[in-house]
Length: 270
Image 1 (cartoon, rainbow, N blue to C red):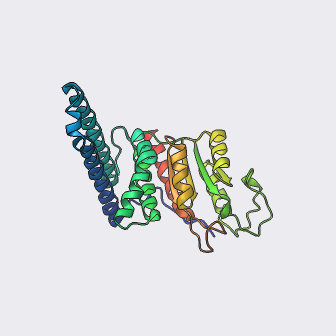
Image 2: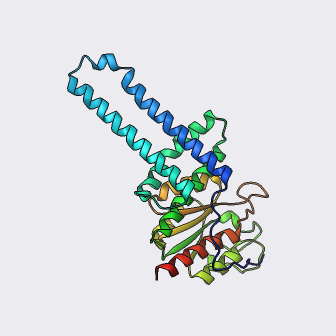
Image 3: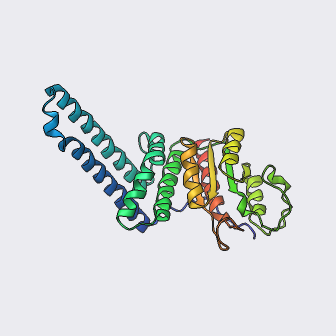
């Protein structure tokens, strides 16, 4: 499977319009539900609060008001990143907030409107990727990049062990590892193959990258982004023509497109 040629002007494809509409709608609905919940938390026991000192009532109202404002600002910034693809204030903290707290809420809200968990996970990774690339474009181009791949990309009949040393690969071309090794050499980035979350965390600690380009299934990719935050992770879902965890594939050209954009950012900074 030969590598496709890309010009230096290639950019990572932005979110498609339908995906943007879905994401914005889901986040907007989530924000509204959170605000309604905060209002109910105050209004339902309102008469009970009146039995306390008036300053306590004002304290509770102020606290819930601040939480409501923070929710409104956070959701608005997320929507701005999704629509514009530009960096926004506090984007690093915003990405951590999205990964750790917003995803579980988005899954629940998605179920309420008939969205499957996988659809919400795709939406989450899309927003995460937008924020990561926006940060990189804003003068934070990463220098140390790690390509982190799942072991299921390796051909199931291959006898070579590559999980601790990917260079052991014989480059026969029967799986995407050969092309990924060529990308690693071409762009001067690290490539590693992990058998699971524990090994992936070990690799990240060893390599200490500024940016991870990770390939995995929906569950592993979303949990990996959550585990590594605030370290930026650009997520790409694997392809499973033979079912889960067996001879999976990856769009190598998409991995290269991300690398090419990062390289162009470095040149712009120098």
